Image (cartoon, rainbow, N blue to C red; front, side):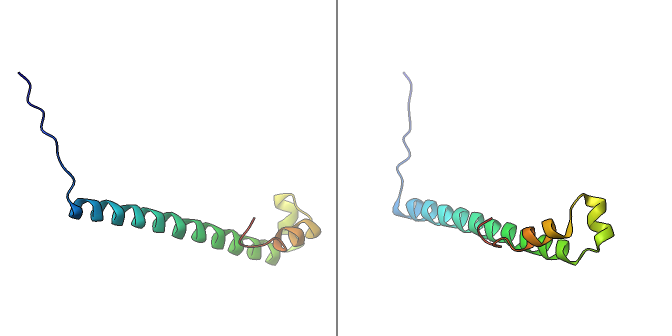
Length: 75
């Protein structure tokens, strides 16, 4: 004979589960915003490079300006 114990969720367990899900969602959102801000910083740095430095990475001044002009949030 096999005994199977079922664990019933209490309201407290349900609340904890919802809280953890909210925390995970918040962390994902924060990571997404941080990623976009890092892209913005990188683009600004790209704009500040000299023509020689841009040539070293294989870009023209026009390409650097086009990249800098992109939206910091959506792309």
